[in-house]
Image (tube, rainbow, N blue to C red; front, side):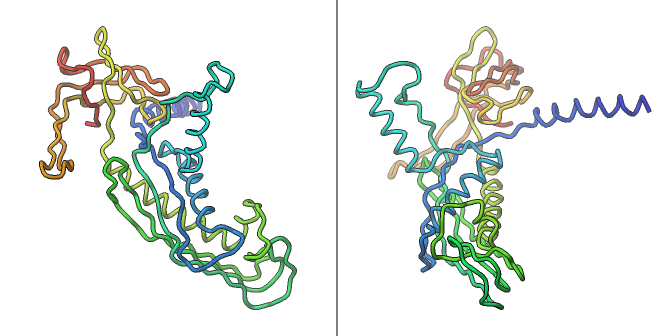
Amino acid sequence: MKKILIFLMCISIMVPALVSAEGNLRHSIMVSKFENRSNWSGQWRLGDTFGAMLTDSLQQSKKFIVLGEKDMRREALAEQDFSASGRTAGGKKKAQIGQMTPAQLLVKGEITHFQHSTSGGSGGIRIKGLKLGGGKDKAEINAVIYMVDSTTGQVISSKKVIGKASKRSLKVGFSDRDWGADLGGFKKTNVGKAVEAAIDEAVEFLTGQAEEIPWEGSVILVKKGKVYINRGDREGVSKGQSFVVGAIEELRDPDTGELLDVSMEKSGMIVVDTVKEKISIASITDGEGKIEKGMTVMEP
């Protein structure tokens, strides 16, 4: 029995280390406002709520560096400009210009179809958009999701996602009238469940697409045999991870300037020793003396 306990303790120590070494490299992503093209209107803003819930789900997935939506970023920029005007108190806590994290990936989309209906019983009471009682309630929402490369503006991929929910004798239903701001109550309805189902499908799609996009960073300093890169815990870098380092050659269309292809001339390999929030420090395992500041860091 004692040997089994020792074995289990060893496994519990080893597993996190293995997961950490494997890593979960992340791209930065921002969700734009979703357009409601479903010809449905009400006090509840369908596109805004869908976008907000998608942003939250991406954050909870821990697969991305999730940035605020456009309106939040505009507010942040306005606050930075206000701080720089000299009309606010100084100090380290004031908003700083030039610190905004750029989005590598953009997500936008359209709600193409929305349906909610309650049948099989017209009884019940309605309180602030929540219908208590009734018969069979069903809901469906369709949306088209686009992932866009922020550098080129090109659509990387797109997908139609569908969320459905149906339950007989549902005690809490949805009404498009007198809808309040109770998101928790909304999620209990079939409409809320349908939206969440569509968002789960969207997050799975976006995660799968992001895994196909090359992840890279840059060498910011080479000092005493150590290589400092501009990617850290925030981007999912883990201690023990290995990266290839080299110079990037870009081929561009001479007529349009469009980027046609990227290739790397390998200079060496590094393994991460120390991980901080935004940087990592690595040792050189191959290519001593060949790795220089400004070179690109990529997965092997």
